[in-house]
Picture (tube, helix red, strand yellow):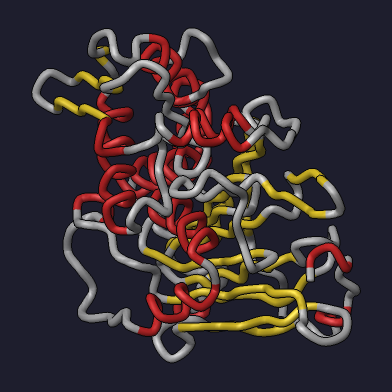
Length: 350
């Protein structure tokens, strides 16, 4: 059997590589994908904390001073972020910018701040103090010192924008990804519609080693973990995923992959569930049910917990990692790779 015909277009944006993979004969999909990828620069100019002229940077500068008129896309992603903060009890919070900066992760160089500095930063965190006026299209942070950081949701939101544009032009067999850690799939990557798309999950600590693959069908997937952004302090490995409720790095997992309806929700909820830990995540997903396919776009409905997840944990005894899955009876089609769980895990992670 010959390999299925696929076309991939990539673009660098938001400090990662975005890609659109089109199955079958692409028709006008390539042109649409190029236009959508070209628009990533505009979205980044709205959302990035690394661009002083971005609208998010302006909101941060004017925190506690006055509202800022912003683009509709920024209203949309911030409104969704607040809804997810409410769902997760603050385990995900886009106003955690002061904490991210305090720990040095805004500058991508981790450092252990003093407990007093953490408490001071934590006092400036809270999505309930983010004022969004949809009628006037304005956003304001209520208090000086507050700061938005969309690093945990912006990439997924950007992918959903690409998906919407492709679907609006009649494209229904494609996969889009942002750095391959967040993926949204539509249709199938081969001629058999029920097969969906094969998405590999990599070992969180061993580059190039696959743990297995998921068959993704009209869903989004995102992986969170601190395998790439971390530093060592007094023999401890501290990752970049911070708990907005405590101010400290978190995670009893090496990585967590979740499945949801949209890239926006997958991006944010993979972070929230990673913060909450594997036991709470197992309980959340164990209580999730599915029903008939909804008829409205995912981001126009209230967010809900993921329907399935895959956690990678260090083994309690011996070396290697342990893989735990939840929601497999709902919609998680998982195929493990052989012998990949025996890769040694550093003692500092046990």
